[in-house]
Amino acid sequence: MNKESFGKRNWLVLLIFGLAGQIAWSVENMYFNLFVYDTVAKDLDSITLMVQLSGVVATVVTLLAGTLSDKVGQRRKFISFGYLIWGVTVALFGYLSPELVGKIFNTDGAKSVAITLVLVIVGDCVMTLFGSTANDAAFNAWLTDNTRPSFRGSVEGVVAVLPLLAMLIVAGGFGILVESLGYSTVFLALGIVITLCGALGIYLIKDSDTLEKNGGIRDILYGFRPSVVKSNPALYLTFLIVVVYGIACQIFMPYLIIYMREYLSFSVVEYSVVFGVAIVFGAIINVVLGRISDHAFKPRLLYLAVGIMAMGLFAMYIANGMGHLANLIFFGCAGFAMITGYIFVAQLTGSIMRDYTPARDAGKLQGVRMVFSVLIPMLAGPSIGNAINRKMNVPLENAGADVMTTEFIPAPEIFLAAAVACLVIPILVHLLCRACESEESGANG
Image 1 (cartoon, one colour):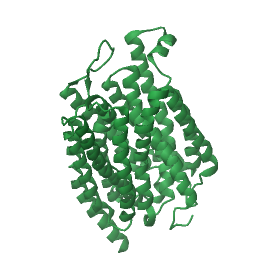
Image 2: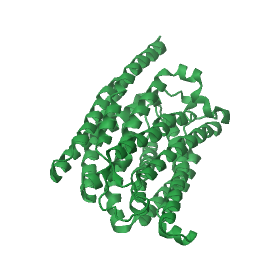
Image 3: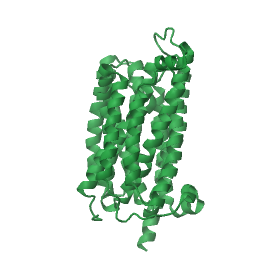
Image 4: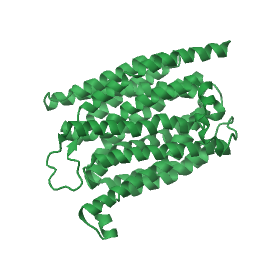
């Protein structure tokens, strides 16, 4: 590989596998929740538990798979075969229903719903197992292997946009497809696409020429050794920024579509337009910002990125009670600001983490990254968000005789809490700037 360019083949791999993976994660994070809410039970507690357990599985699996991929000196097979099986698990998820469970277990009513909730949570964890092996562990390590600081900001700018592009596809097109075709058909189609990507990867993906076998299973906890933390202060300070940012996102993200539909009374088309406009403009701006960050001191740009995100979240908090059309316009503008900051923070922290990740240890450190970017945020964030929803107790209208319903819906205060959480980040950014400057001066000295 030319060390000063990413290469056309690698760009193709990034776009295909990055986008397919992010679409799958977006479906899990947004529509698995809505699937449970719509077809099984209107139970935010179960949705919260599903998000949390998925985070635990994702982290543990990434620790194991990332370390193993270092040990065998392979990323390609983990990505390809992981995507193959990941698609199968996504395809099967949409066929779970209380009616099917009732027939299999000869139950009905609340018991069928309870069993179905258990099965969807287990099914989500199984899907996460293969998805994290393929995407979180192997694909992220492959990106680190194949990028260099001189062009990493440009690559990371595209990487940061992909989740939002996936969110646009999922929140917009997915919602409309679900209304016309149903969950099972759409999950089946998505699963087939992911599996086909895995088959394509066997022939398309090539590991970096610099990738070598390194370490062993004993290195699963390598990234938690005090000596490793002490040797890489900039990397671990970035991890701390990511954990606070992740908590802020997870306070509101699992409940976002439900909030727009139930609290703001947006139709599928309306919230699809809101998402679409915000994401398209936010993504365009961040592609430009990604290129600029290649020629700037990235840590200092985090002040701007976090400030934009916090302002957007606060605006989303107050974007209600103005009348339907005004709510739609104001929430869309607020969402644009939030998403612009959201992508920019992700792009900057992702690039900084890759800049300060020791090249030989890229695989084994993916699990550490997951602890900070997934495990802690997905345990803490939804708990905070659901506690706020429970405290505000906005009633679910027309709950009727539904079994196992929490009888409350997401409240606007989840956006305020997320904005407040963002205010902690500038303190960590200050420490990160000092650490990066120290490491750079040490390297130059």
